[in-house]
Length: 146
Image (cartoon, rainbow, N blue to C red):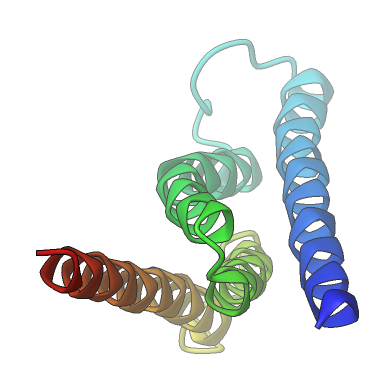
């Protein structure tokens, strides 16, 4: 039991570290394109910069709430669900970045971007299931203690 918990905690924390470095990579991609084309604000109708900005912004829009939900599950000992949730989130963000930064994504019928958003949504669903289990556990304990 201890090794299982240790493995799950290692996986969860490693995923958090990966997501931080992935965020920094998205940030650096935007900065690199801004410096290359000397664009200090907006995207100056540069499609590569616009896609890099949207990949970065989309990460910022979805990851914080998903991490909060995963951390809630983690700290309430729903480690399997929290690890599954953060794994789906990580996959989703990788696929989404691959799709949105590809200027030829229309030819691929937005396959990677849609897959990325699907995995991200599944991450939320996984967390919601964990929260429902947690609420059920609380109600059971409340009823039992009356």
